[in-house]
Image (cartoon, rainbow, N blue to C red):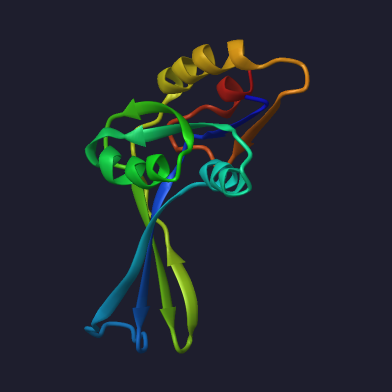
Length: 149
């Protein structure tokens, strides 16, 4: 593969619709869709849609890994998965007549040990002319200097 994407902080994007949003009120919402996302995952998905192969490396929480990975597998993406403790975080995207907002959540435990395992698998695949796209923000338990080393 000449393109490798790395996503350490993926999310399941939950898109919901509300008639209106009022502080401290009950309201019914409609779930419009649930997407497996993350910056690097989205890059690999777009490349796949353009018939361009890439290797999508993603750290995924074990608790909901099947739900997260199935849509990616179904569209034919080439995956390198690092299973970690916990769940993939869920970001709720709320659409109302007043506008849109995102409610982000924290997620699975991706720490320096998980990063080390990913680096061990990915670095031997990197060659001259290969593009490595490190995308998205770091999970809270990852040390930036360790990732960049």
